Length: 276
Image 1 (tube, rainbow, N blue to C red):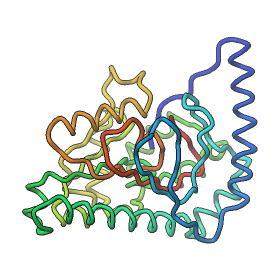
Image 2 (image 1 turned 180 degrees about the vertical axis):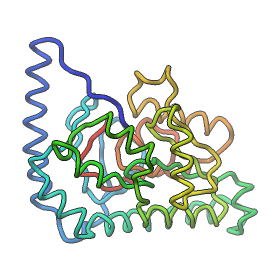
Image 3 (image 1 turned 90 degrees about the vertical axis):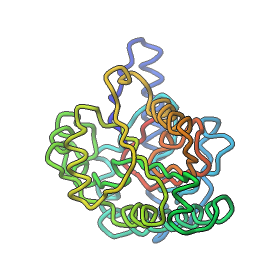
Image 4 (image 1 turned 60 degrees about the vertical axis):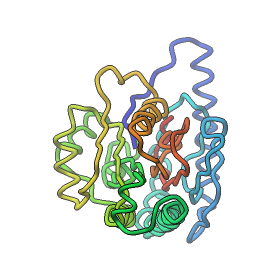
């Protein structure tokens, strides 16, 4: 997950449009949560032209993309449903499904493109997987469920949360990360966190047992105005230019896998935030 601020509407037409989007978001989220199955099936996600030509796999347990330029959160009206989903273990089961699918896809790519499956051969063919951090490797459910109001945006509180390493690991995703590391796959982390949070982020990842990555990309000051989709695509493009073969991008937002420079996308469940 990223932490890009919500931009306010400044003209009557934009205000009206924002209100319509908010209403649509509420209705869509209500419908989505109302039909959450005990365990979701993996499906091919179609986020539209922003990721055209890429196979993206997920469980469908995400806020729907209503507008490519609008960031929104679920808000307190859906706290009961969201708490049931995350506390019941269903979120973890869905994470496990997506992680297993990612592992299978990476293994198949290695078998077809590398000179063997031994660690040395995998390292030599420069196979790479990119991970998001927030609500992917690390879990921010406790933070969002205890904000006031619940499941709403609180940038100041979030910064304190990052500094204190309040996030536990998402265990199924950490297992995927460590299995890939042991297989010899290169690992890159691309996060919407700011460069000023590098030390806190590295320390927290180490405390949560997430080590052995080759690249950690955080937003620089001049990248503050970029959308998450553009910023992350540029970061992947830079890795591609260095000769890495990015097999998969693993994240909780469509913006983690928009605009190319990877082969497969694996979309983890996130029912409380959508970030373009």
